[in-house]
Length: 120
Image (tube, rainbow, N blue to C red; front, side, top):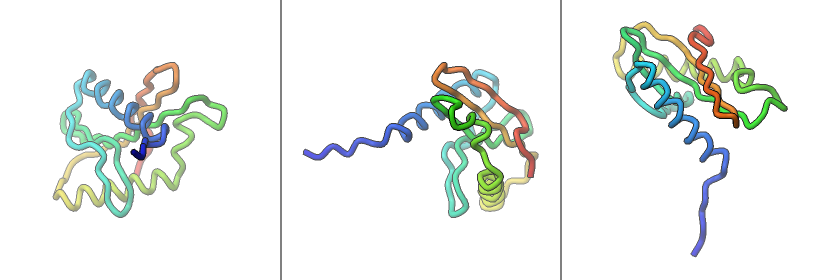
């Protein structure tokens, strides 16, 4: 029998998104959607905090050897997240205030929530 185990970075990514999701629930946010994807890219978590739609990028790094989790969100990555968000809002006919947050994690399991990490 063949074993098609998934690459460890994908498994870790899912674990990190799951941890971030539960952390944000504990902070009072409500889930709108997980892992929305389209031709422009993917949004890890779409949450709601009061009247604000919160677009969340989750980043995990084993170490800061090649830069931290926050530094890994390049201008190009930000542009893809923004384009994906615009597509999401348009396709779901949503007119809402939005905020782009980043959750970073590392092997020490510290969760760092950066609100308003970048702007459109």
